[in-house]
Amino acid sequence: MTAEGRRSSAAAAGQSGAAEEQTLRCLRLLRNGPSSYAFTQVDATAALAAARTADQGEASGLPLRGTVLAVKDNIDTAGFATTAGTPALRGNRPQHDAPAVAALRAAGAVVVGKANMHELAYGTTSDNAVYGRVRNPLRPDRIAGGSSGGSAAAVAAGTATAALGTETGCSVRVPASLCGVVGFRPTVGTYPGGGVVPVSTTRDAIGLMARTVEEVWALDRVLRHPHRTAGAGPSPSGGRVRLLAPRHPFLDGMTPELRVAFEACLASLASAGIDVVEAELPDGVHRHATACGLRIALHETPSGIDRYLASHGLPLRFAQVAARIAGPDVAAILRPLVRRPVPVEEYRHALERRASLGRLLRRHLQRHQGDALVVPTTITTAPRLLPGDRVDVAGRALPAFATLVRNADLSSALGWPAVSLPAVRDGQGLPLGIDLQFPPGADTALLSVARTCERVWATERHR
Image 1 (cartoon, helix red, strand yellow):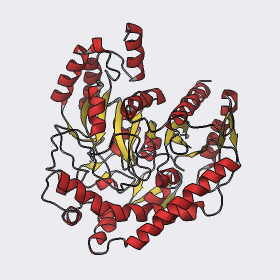
Image 2 (spheres, rainbow, N blue to C red):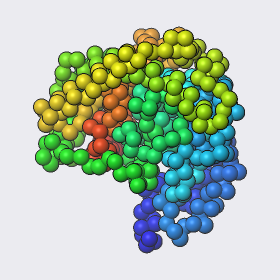
Image 3 (cartoon, rainbow, N blue to C red):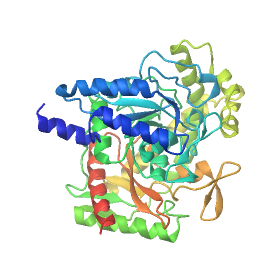
Image 4 (cartoon, rainbow, N blue to C red):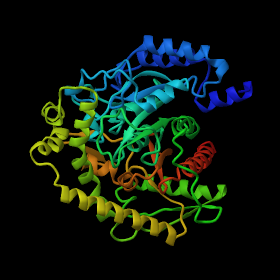
């Protein structure tokens, strides 16, 4: 690779100097900044050693040299425990990286630590009873979102330049929205699998977080090769990108200030050759989504965790993990499954509803000649957490899970690729993401459109 090519790759990976310098910068922020409980484990010595090795390999043009990575604590990372934020797995120390982690390390990324999360990835607040509640670096009295809250908080705080999360529901994009970073979930099956404490084999995906789309794309390029299952995808609109913007229920419950800011962002895209068309979703979409998403996960979690435990030689099974769950919200969801698992017939019906949901959305896009959906990622900026797993939204106490996942959940239920972009700010300067949801396999097109949107909205903010 030419020197110019190395500089280009380094810029794409967020490098602002040698890998060691970038790692030291992140570690200083971690050591000197206020605790946000973003990490469950940090290994500064190993991170610096890996950074020096990456610097020595500069002549080979490592594409991610200078990327300092936080890895969600349900993804296997050699040298660390994989706890999934739950007591029973504190002693789980895998000998090998998950394939995704191994690929990023081989490309020069340095792992600084394991990111805190909502216990067993079953929640949206990252209020972890074992490792502490992840605080939003922008406002420590607010939540960071979840379940990949520590990953988003680490990037927002600068203690990592990028992060891996996982998304079954909206676990990458919700915290990305609340912390003001880019959060990307690929089409399910795009990245090499394995080495992850599962929630749902049907819906799980490793997701990426960084400050810019270009930084996310640098990680994506490494992970997708040679697993190139996600291409550009056709453009139904024949050239100009056409985004469909349903208003109901996606804008319901937003403050007038946030609604105006969201609409202004959409209006600004016309100058970049992106058409935005208001088109409400067909009847049945939300009914199918409600009926399929959680039931699929609840059926698949016990057997998925059992397979993970067995593959790691751990003398545990799901029932023993569930018995030791620390968070009352997660215990209330998962412990009943030990005695009353979701019946197979209910699971099959949920899969049928999921297939119907996919057909409905595909026909909707075709009917309106649309490439994708565009909605606010969440209806609120980072809220305060209230007792009873509720959040304060404009003075109303609302259930955290249902409120925070509502807008992004369609694409997650289907395993479609999506990205949340920091675009809107409220009167207190807190960010709100805008979510692009593309059909499966159109990951490249999604990231290309996301990069255009990011550029337009950055220009608007600086006027």
